[in-house]
Length: 324
Image 1 (cartoon, rainbow, N blue to C red):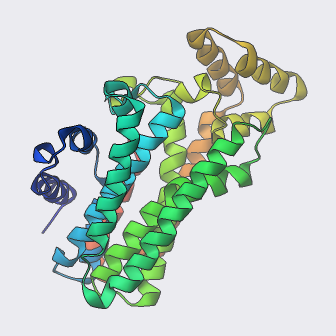
Image 2 (image 1 turned 120 degrees about the vertical axis):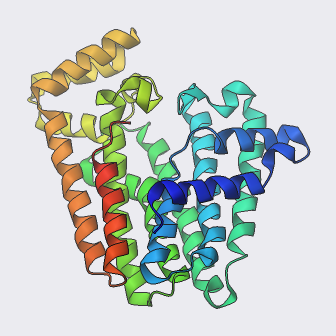
Image 3 (image 1 turned 180 degrees about the horizontal axis):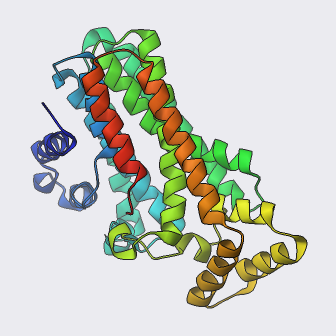
């Protein structure tokens, strides 16, 4: 039986086989090797392999697509860090800080090409649907990132708009991993669609939990500056819900802190105090739990091997309880 850690090790070995550290020019591939070897959890490719195993004993047909998903995901992180001017990723310097922005952009571009090359290695009978899913998802992720950038120019963002943005920016890639894995394992179209829906709910929960962990997570484990979203004035679900719940005086206080407080530490501390008074952490944890519950219910309805679905469910529950 293959468990999550073993599947993660398989992905790690596939990364090693690609030999980014030994490719030339080193200036292009060393940053690729750096971000892929920088302690990522491999959640998306592991989900793809686990979804494949729900419908098949053979995961070899899913290795290429799973690696493509991992490369594309890390490409998005690399470019997101540039756009957010982030210093740290997974507890280490971001690529553009360790090298420079031009290097980071070009290395990210190379990762996209490599990802499509891996997708094209899919078995011929499933290549077209998998390529269609991957293309659609890649474009949706870009759309989600643009919406996120658009939000920076808006005074306020409502919750439905935010949920649509994170669906595109984050959830669709996890959903695609589930659907592509299922198709690689021989699932029917209907079964693969249910796996997609399960992954979509999982992805929404995952991003909302990320928003929570940015402020309430263990800093050393999370690998990011506590309250980084507040410092950057990002309109996360925490801020949106706080402004919706607050009376006019408290809402004005939040806005003043976000717009005018120059001391980063004080800004995070004071905003967090207001969030605590409004019980925002509890609200969002309940929302996260709802999406994880929906993910498990749809997974249960998707057919396939029930014991292997339990493995996937266990991964979902582990992610649901994470602190980093």
